[in-house]
Length: 458
Image (tube, rainbow, N blue to C red; front, side, top):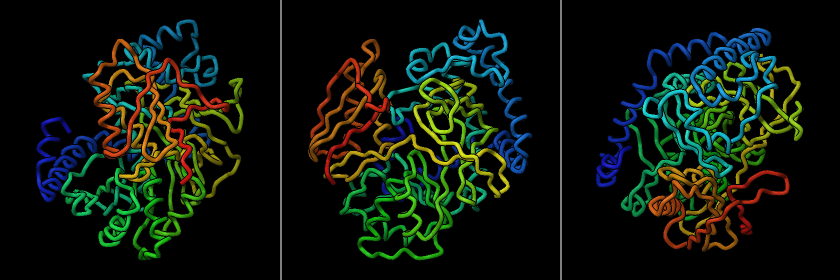
């Protein structure tokens, strides 16, 4: 929402806020679910039973078209591949340089294939704590939603079915907190949005009892939030009715065995995982047999060892076919996966994946709002310019130490105010925030960067 719309929303009573959310979604979804989206959705449904050979052939064709477009419209890639005449052929992909987030961030202006004003801008912090602003073509967005909806539709989901959604949207006002009301509802599409900023022990019972009363068919969103709710329900012996939830669709965070077990046990249903990223990584989706599959129609997945040689378990380098606005070509996304040789009987002939290790479930803890997960922490970069990277450190319940690497030419006092305000929205008013500007934030011994370093014993 724009600034004016936010002011109107914040001053409106609860019922009107729900109506505003409903109207906003009606307008947004009409734009999103258009003719092109329906064509993409139909294509992915029709291709559901393609053989592995057919999928690889389609992948090669899409790769060549994507590379040809990227080289023709992106000054960065045109220059990068000028001495590689066979760059557009998938069999030669390893001749191309690997690009990481730092390279992307420093060259966005020349990587874009269209002006920012003509596309959909997405700013991501991600679990690496580095800001990156990407631009999507309209068709990029349409294809991404088609892939996601095609995945969920295999378990009966479609827009309009009653859904409880846990995401990083700021929804609540002071009156909501006084009334122990931690949700807003889209009446038209039957979606209830639950705040992920108030996952505190003293509030969790209100979440559970409202979920039982609302009786959604699907749960979608941050798994760490749903996990805290489920754990509270189990500990306090609050039974969740059987045959209520059809499926759980987590987003943004890694699913551990413990998270899956707790969610499936408490809500008496199945969880189906999917992997992508806000900057546009290709999809990995879970089937009815609980096997993860690479979606070859959405991109190329390379799993590499420290010497950049192919391996079964290692870091993930991706080329994403629905990033025409900001092409991701051999992009080191910072996650790790393990490939599998298993042949799945579900009918999906895409290659299988044993596990996704990339995104951790680190959190910070606030006495006011409880556990704040990685998705909400990385979203603190929204509206902020010039933060190259940040890391949140916590060793005491009442204080956060935040290291920031800033771009001195872009970052201003206003950006510090916005960043601090974003953090305050998540942690409440009682904690101390200490900002420290540094030239570099060290990585772990493993070579990984941690957005959150929490040494609290909770």
